[in-house]
Length: 208
Image (tube, rainbow, N blue to C red; front, top):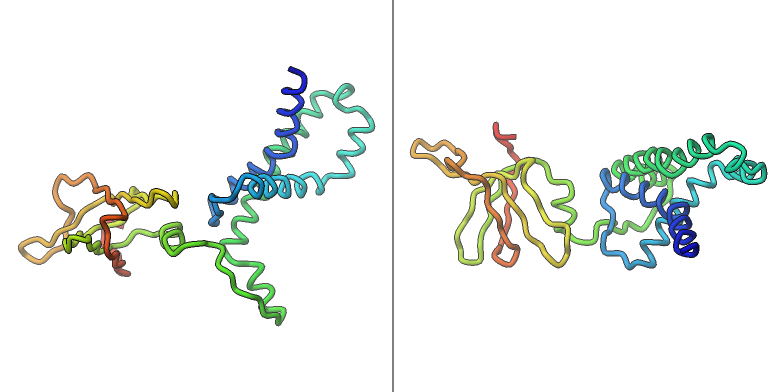
């Protein structure tokens, strides 16, 4: 029982801050979800190390002064800040910096050339991870075409083993030539294996 509790505490202390950081960062920038467990855990540990390194001197002093027994409330507050609050802030900052390609642009401004490697592994992930509302024409392998509006309620799978998607609205051209949402439509589910081509239209209409 003691060993199980110790393992749980070690995981919380060394992995949870990194996990919180990575989760928040992933809301703003693409992060590969297909990493092997060893690489995933190493990434969490690296982020957690950065969190603790910022306050390494203070943590060492608190440990020597036995804060856990002398100041349990203060220790709890500090733990919450280190495990939850600070990783959230760092995740937000790093996510925004990655989204804006801050470091790559900074290196270019310093006059250095870098090897451009795509952090997003596939075109599917690149297109759909940053999708904004737009029209699309989906051509099925049967030759049929589906006019669709990709709105905020649309969804595209990020699972490499299950590439499917949901389109929030199906469109048609009325008798007077106006593009409109098919009455009564609640969207359509499409499996990638049924799709031959997806053409995206830049102009977004009033349904945005």
